[in-house]
Image (cartoon, rainbow, N blue to C red; front, side, top):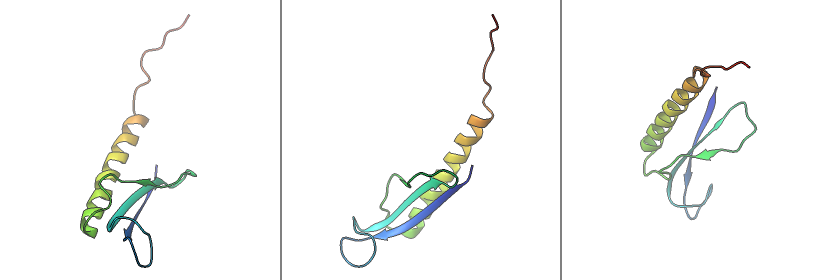
Length: 79
């Protein structure tokens, strides 16, 4: 599964996105028609903090996706 990450800068005034001042990180699956999901902790004070949050989320997503693909379906019972 592939993912897309976006970091945007928000501020209460000025051009661009409006909200609490800081870097907002979000992600979404590339091959699904879904909206973006905001990464917890956003907005971040620095771009580096937002990048680290994206890397951590990618690690979580790829670990979760890999474990669900390779999970054993368990024993089967036949009647």
